[in-house]
Length: 322
Image 1 (cartoon, rainbow, N blue to C red):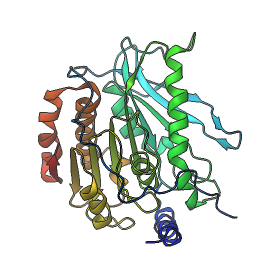
Image 2 (tube, rainbow, N blue to C red):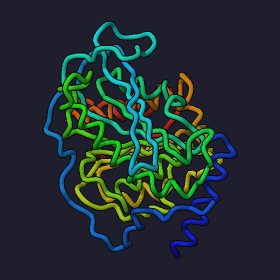
Image 3 (cartoon, helix red, strand yellow):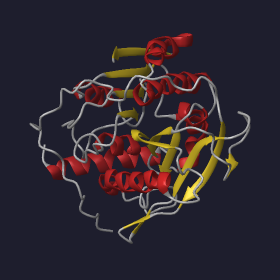
């Protein structure tokens, strides 16, 4: 398939996503699609040393980090993080961070969305012991110009934002100084953010990433030439997705050459389960938390809990090749 054809299909899919509430001249993508014959790594995974994830929940703090890549791409980043104090309740603005070093998860929102749309899920991750950093993209967020082809530039945005977030670990006086496990990083994203996340493991491979979580994603524009060091992947997709067909997400999943699993929600649509605290979202949250505990903390007990969490309530099935 030609690059022009891929771009047209991407635009069509993501325009539909925006019209369904997926939460000028297009710039030239800065990272071209990788060739199909690019070799994949056979490095064992996870590469994080075996350890134990925190057994308790944390309070959650929230803050903003103002970034701008190359002077023309404003990238405000919302950061949720484990905070000192009791768990539960609303995230506390600029709260003191909890003691410890916590892995980092970079999250990419969908077309027409913003990080806050996913707060129910992302604060669950933060309470479990992860620092979650979510950029607001300049052309695909709510009230932006909806230039869907700019999704192809977003993997580079995430890599830039990740560099700036990790630098907080050494910034004098910062809340997160000495609190980041800078060698334990995952990427996650929904819909257009799922495209972005796939791109971080294919055409725009960022070797700092140890794992990926793709919600309702497709490979249009970024390809399926997964490259570099093996990084376990968890795909989450609704079988009734009205925007990105389940078969399209499954095809990308099938192309992953590394340890992988796919959580399929039998009655799931394009992602409303991620936006409210219902039974399906709890299955998604519990399954993704255990996956991140395994891949970023190296916790083998968490890996064993994934199948149980995934199938609780018979709301989903799990294809498990982790």
